[in-house]
Every structure is written in structure tokens, then in C-alpha cells.
Amino acid sequence: MPANNKIYRECRCTPCRKKPKGYSLLKYSAWHQHQTIEKALQACIAYQAKFRANVDAAPPLNVWDEGIQKCKPQTQPLLPAPKGPEIYEGGDLLMDEDEFVQEPFSHNNVPKPELEIPLDPVNDPPPAPEPLHNSQQRLRTPSPPLPSPSLEVEYDSDKSESSYEFSHTLNDPPALRFAYLNALADHVVRKHPVRDAEINLKNTLIALRLIPGGIPDHIKPLTTLKSVRRHLGLNTSGLLQQVPICDKCYMRYSMEDVLAADLLATCTRERPSCSGSYMKIKTRNGKPKKIPAKVLLYMKIIPSLRHMLLRPTFVRLLKKGSEASVRERPPNTYYDISDGSVWKSARVGLRRVFRHDGTVADEPITPGSNMRVSSLGYGLFAALNINWFRVSKKRSSGAIYLAILNLPRYAQYHVHNVILACVITGPKEPHLEDLNFVLEPIVESFKRLYAGVAVHVYQENLPQAVERLYSYPTLLGADIPARSKFNKIPAHSHSKGPGCNCNKNTADLNNPQAKAYDPLEFVYADEYNILQLSKESTSSPRARACIAKDYGI
Image (cartoon, rainbow, N blue to C red):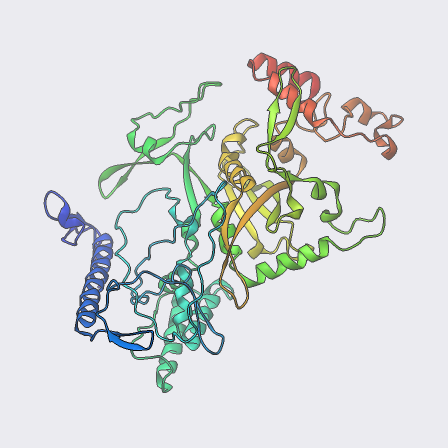
């Protein structure tokens, strides 16, 4: 019979014993998780004790010194730190333990600590590679077991951004790894139910057991899709971020704000004021619990790009698209967006300055920081797409998704190459200024990518290289109403400004004899003039309304 999750159990694992009572009362699911991690912790401690005993019992090493054979005791630490990559005689590469984490209990389904790399090293250069060891060094001293992970789970934690802990699956036998991938493909690609996919996986494992040496005896195969997904590094839940928001104006809050609020938890927005709420009470198991009134779901852009750059096919497509963008074209011929002037002139390392006379200009942040994006090794051009979909007559939901324009045209909008940055919950679409709260996390990610972040990049037959990744938002793909909201301009039905990038007004569009439809008379709107007017409009709501009415901005 399934365990009753409503019954509380006493947990006396290592972290819970540190509580004032010496234990914690947990539901069965949490208690079972604590017990699983406690078993892994005790196994690690036992393994470490056994390893130390074996090292203490081992005879001292012989060291040769200028032809004189001397016997010296071992002075190295018992548990050596991870070393650089080693090469076998046949040319096979054994990765650095900073790159591939070798864990003796990789099949216990225990979450592993994440690799710490700098998230935003703007001023620090990439770390220099460590020297290779002697190719005759065939055997490695076993590394110490990794410490037990913390049992505390942080809401909205962003520590998984630089996790590359899934590469230990390369230690699995190829047949077992193929069985895992086939089981996930049954569920994800071929749409088989979870139960059917797990039954097929178990049958495949039984068949492998019948083959001599099919599965080594020391390996305990995984039999659930959840554990397989985590073991292969395909568990994308760490890339998702839930942000509490106001149920009316979409103003963002933290989970700490939600837990500290009291009813009615009125929104704190002042200009203009909002009467919405960001917290509500929900009864669970007879106890009241504070939860967000509404939640926005984001896909973290930078961690998603890190995972994509570890895919061999994605890196090959980037190189293919880069080669296509530098080919010679006939004059005045455009094959792709890379032939346009924005692609060739886009730069990073600049900051926007508003001068005293009201003019706007872009200046280098530091001397030499002004660089063309297309000349960088990993300078990505991004297209931000936004649109709303009417789910029912009274409900509309939106989506913001990101496409990489450096890829070939046929691969830019493949599902596995697109990042669903945000899902905008309904039932109504956010207003013009409310959309700013929705876009804030995406804008912050692009600011970090504009400065450059450190990433690991797949290299065939070589260790993963640490590169600096840049991204430049090139264009916006949306219909006219969504584009007007995104750019903070009135809709196309405005009395004067139609909300486009030209200097024509609605009167010109309504007159067939006007020059609005003459391609030779087309003139782009002055972006710096728009920025100057938007800067002036921040003084008061009345000033903003006047400028929006007169100029359509």
C-alpha cells in the first residue's frame, strides 16, 4: 500500500539532529528524501574511512634521485586535490575532475553539488589551462567522495546556473546509456505514458542482464524516468524560475515578501497606485499557507545558453552559420539578416549617456571596450519574439521566446534551439507600462550578456573550453499591438503616430497622394530624438500624456 503522506514521522538524520529537539517532524515524502540522502552520506563516510585505512596500510613509495635508489615515506596528502587532464597512450583524453565529476555513488540518485565558475567575470580573464601530466601515468589515485548536499531547498535559487554535473554519465556502459536515452525518447518524443516508458526500460535492462557483461555487477541500473532524467543531466527544472507578482499590475515581489505579508497584501506600487494583491491564503492539510496571488514562469536565459553550448550539434550549427555570414554577396543582395547593416555595426562595450543639452549618445565604458559583436568568437545575435494567444473567449496568455540568429536560417526556430524566456499568465494582457515588470528579468539577463559571461563550450576530441559569451538583442518579432507595447509606443490606431520606425503620421497614410508610400521618400525615425522625448516625459504623468498625444511616443 502507498505510504500515507499525511502522517508525520520523526527524522533523525544528521542535519535534523542539530535542531533544538534533536529531530524534525516531516511528511513521508520529505522524510523519505532525508533518509535517502542520509544513507548516501553514511556510505560516503564509510567509503572515506575505508580509503584512509587502505592508504595508511600501503607501503611507502620508492623515489629515484640521480641514480641513487632511496626509499622515502610518502609526504603527499592522503587525499590529493584534482589534477589536470591526463592522456592515455592511445590518445584518449581523461578529463579534469573540474570538468567531469567522478562520483562513486552516481547511481544513488543523490543530487550533486554544482561546479562554481564565475557568472559574470567582466574584468577577470578566462583561467589558464593546467599543464598536462606525463602520458605514462596510467592509474589515478581515487578522489575523495563528494560531500553530502544540503537538505535545504531555496526558493528561486539561482545557484544552478553554472552546473555541469551531468557528465558523469560517460562512465556508464554504452548499452546502458542507450537504454536510458531510448526510455526518455519514448516519453518525450514518441509521447508514450510514463508507466509504459518505465516498463519498456525495465524490460530492456532485463535483456541486458541476460547478456554476459551487459551490465557490470557493481552498477545498479535506474528504473524511473525521473532518476534517469536527473542522471543524464536532462532535468530542466533547475532552469525554471517562478516569480511572485501582483495579480493586477504585474509588479514583481520575492517569496520573502509573500511570507512576511499580511492580508490583504495590497500592492506597493505608488505611481500609479494599484489595488491588487500579491499574496493569498490557501488551506493545505487543514493549515493555512501563504502563497503568491499570481506567478510568472521564466526560463533562465544564461543557464539555458550554457546548456546549449555543450550540445555538439548546436556548436556545429553556430560554426556553420558563422561561415555562411562571411561569404561574399553580390552588390545590394541580401540573403540573410547577417547581410544587413545592423549585424555589421552592432557593438558591445558601450554605455548610453544623456547630456545636459538633452542629446543622447553612446560612449565606450573603458578605453578599448568598444567591439563589434560579429567579430567576437561567441557574440550571439538574439531575436526576441512576443505574442499573445486567446485560450478562450475571456482568457488570453502570452509568450516571450528567444531565437539565436547566428544559426542557419533553417535551424533558428527549431524547438530545441529556442528559449521560452517567459510565459505571461492571463486572464488579461498586461497594459503598456505593466509589461515593463514582465520584461525586467529578461533585460537584466541581456545586460549581463552584453558585458560577457564565462561559459563552457563543447570541443570535439578536446576538453571543454572556457569562453566569454556575448549577446546582442537585434530585433523584435511580434504583431503591431505587441510591438507597440514592447517599445512603449501607442498602437497603430494612434491619431498621429502609427507606431512604426518611420517619420510618417496617420494623415500621410490616409492620403494616397502623399509620399508615405514612395520607397524613395522613406526616412527612418530618429531614435535619439525618441530617447530624448522619453527622458523628458519622466517629469510627470501629464508631461508623458502630452508627449504621447503630440508625438506618438
